[in-house]
Length: 497
Length: 112
Image 1 (spheres, each protein chain N blue to C red):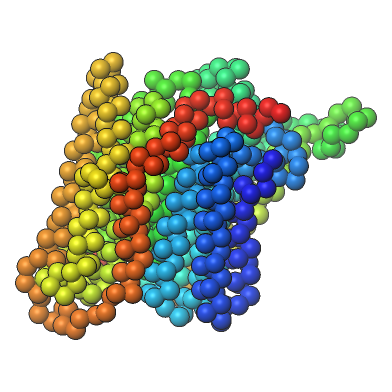
Image 2: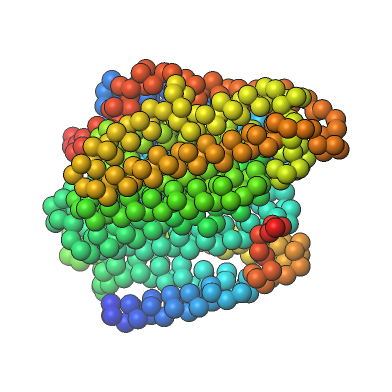
């Protein structure tokens, strides 16, 4: 029992509720929301230390014993994700202070932002599959409103599709929960794992596993990403970057949790299929990333490639590969937020989303240009930046597995080639927007973007730390990978007393 | 009883799917609502249908109904209620703003 586990979701929840009462007082809203995020970061850092020293921490809510009540479980994998999510959202909210506009600030923007973080952190920490559904809904409802907040034509059109698709996938999630309860009679994830191990993963349970795979693939944008390009390019930059950094990652987290803790008995069926899905995602994402000449479109397809790459680590299903995926997940959260913020600034200063109407930005905005270049190198996986450790671990494991089964060689090759497509598509933005002649008329007056660059530089520093400091993080990531591949640790922490 | 419920759930899903495939926004919302009712009934059925027992676990009671599916459905209904309300308002706003409720005309931004 450790009450600190609940703080990362209860602090933003109460802050969000409180802020709803002070909608006109913008100064108070800003201060409180930043303070809440700092508090979450502080408690999560403390929690990381506790998990490192004392193992997995749990909290039985209301004192109800584990398989009967709801538990929150903080293992290293989820705590590191909570920590990164909170840091990234703190920096994005700094960006939002300057760009989001008074109208949105007075229309509950900060409350919704806190609720979004509640949902995200809750999904990472919960140990009950129905509770996971509830936190998904908390996160999604906040994201629906954030996406449509402002009510422009483009946002409304995008929100309609986003809401309908997500409500359908939530219903499918419920179906999965119902079948699981019918077969196994429990919803606690650790207990589910025990029961699946007892009865064996029969054909029926594998079908249920596929239902969950469909649901989480839709949330994570794994192959089922048709909803993503439009909805991530419609909202203002600060919101789009939080979405790109956090929302798909929650789906990926759920895939990891379910397919390492509960349905891990038949990897030749489930994990092979995940590998195929990851391959398809990388191929389609790469095609999308090179096909468009519109900054937002290129960036959203880069999000999709990243999802495919992370799931490769799950498909390989070894401890090292899981560590690689975690390294890459942390990197991807930071780098995607950074990429979207920089993309938003480029669009603001150039006054257009189309690359053909840009050029010569480096002359007036050197810092912006070089930050973008470093970010694109980080995403391409060039050492010593943050993409490198994750990529190297996943590719190593891919080749090692490829010796046993040739299909993994193809997957590894695709993962490697997709990095080239990432580099190519982003270099295209860099070359067309920053080099060349300044377009007449489009950026006549030079805007002051120093304030906007502060959160970007913060994220950039974090990204460099994740690369250069990979050695410092290694013991933490190793612990996370070990506990993912050894589900009995999780089960013992939750059920044994 | 379970068989009958399965048929009913199947019918709800079929109608819901049919409505969701139409072009009219309001029909899509009705469809998603029907499908989620189907899902709620499925949870109830999956928990096992029994007669003659209150959903409690007391020391002396000989028979009882499993209360968990009901608790799950309650949560799901509340969430779905909020979602449908939001979706209806959103559809209205979109209709006022875009001037149509035809999904064909809600294709994405400036396809070049």
